[in-house]
Length: 102
Image (cartoon, rainbow, N blue to C red; front, side, top):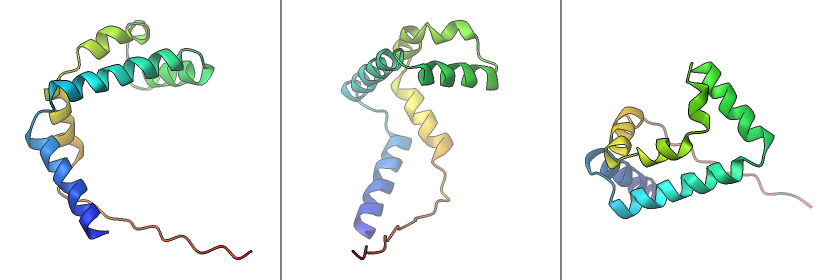
């Protein structure tokens, strides 16, 4: 388990110090486009978008302008987010499920 934890922390540190590659950025953008297009089919998607816009006082018009939002994503956005959300203090939780008795 320690090896896996070390690898995850290494990747987080890499995100904090190095920009993602153009290939990684394009893969993320494509996944976001697919997510949005799939989500359009479900009421839960729209409810979530409206709730978030209301909660954070976002412009409702931006919900339909998802393409521009995705296109504007940059490698530096991910680096900034990694530095904002992945602080030095962290906790490791190991889940050890009980064995089932049949």
